[in-house]
Image (cartoon, one colour):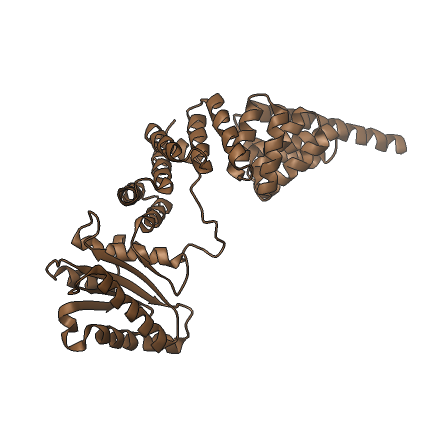
Length: 412
């Protein structure tokens, strides 16, 4: 299977937040690492001119973006005053730097402190001073050097990743760079299809937190999307060894077997995943699909109906339900299911053809059935089943038209 085909086939599970109050940020500061703006690049260049110190702290600070225009206009002056006050204005240039990234966000770095906790205390003091002076909430991400195996010049990028981490919790939060920050950064790179960079972030996070299942799973997912299925399976099995009841990992193992066309193994793991959590759409959909393919329609229908319930605006489970009911010659039930499938996925050739067949079996709406049958074949011109159904519906339509003309003659 080619990488392109794999990308279409795969719907891996990644751990999501269970807290409804946690949401991804609208803007990711870590994007500046790869596409630096003028202000960020200027600050980075100034920082790189400083000889590496034994201790360094970088931070990205953002005032609440929903603050009023008056607050935003005062932000720069307030930030500068607060920055100078905590470092002592007379010596601040020798102990730290700062730069405005835009009207609400600032980058800063300082050194010349005895212990990391002393540096973090200064940052907390800075945050509280700015918040009090502007009467608004402050978002902050921080990173320090030394930190694990990270270089001096990685400290500023790590602070960008930390504020993205903090942004998940909203204004008023301050996060110090950690393995979760790297997971979030990796997810962002993954979202942008920058898979090599995503792997680097996930791997760096794993070096900090070697048994983090979410990071191990993320490495597996990324390798899977890239087509490295054996490597992906290694990571998923490694995560499963840490926690055999982690549902996303069990499902992902099943999905790898599905892609490798080892459907019996896939069903085994998917049933196991269902036993752990019967309320996951992807599990119910794939398990139902595979059971249907294995000629177990009764078992399949249970899972497909669960998928329809879990995600009522998805077309695929309704299409599979329609196919099962069509095989049972339940034309009415099949028609209703295909109706939903077409409503949510108007270009689903299988659903269009199935809906046309269901209407034909009921010998009603033949004009619509003919239109749907033609459209399905237009979407998939080489499908023999769609051709066969189209011919059947054409004959039925012709017969109905002939019968109509005969009745008209008799009436005359």
